[in-house]
Length: 190
Image (cartoon, rainbow, N blue to C red; front, side, top):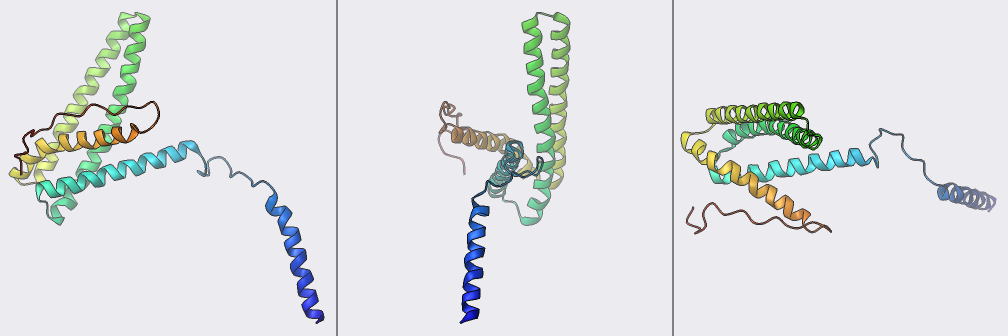
């Protein structure tokens, strides 16, 4: 009986001491730990969205191009590598357009010309990158698949972006973008 009373007393004391400790506010993790860090969460969300886009595009392209597993295994790493390079160039372009807008607002012809030169150089680099991407993809694909990809890839990317923008339309203050014209309005394409 004494043992039961001792265990019961110990249990009551333990629970009695644990309750105030549990009621205390929890410590925040140190900065940089990534927990509840808006910048880290935003980056993680961006990575998840990027991965979902790549998976959706892979499914569509695999189906539309009739890719076997070996070809798909070679094709998608090439696309992913160039996607990252093109995304950086597009981000640079956005910054350059902001720079141009600021120069125009300031009315400084020298700064406007410099920003224009940088935008033209960025455009040229994007074209060269897209050209090199297609050259690398042609090595992996049959001529028929490469011809189909030339038409299909921009369309698939536009549809995915349209879907993403439409998903944002459900948020307050957002509107869905107007629909893009279909490549085949009569549905004759197989």
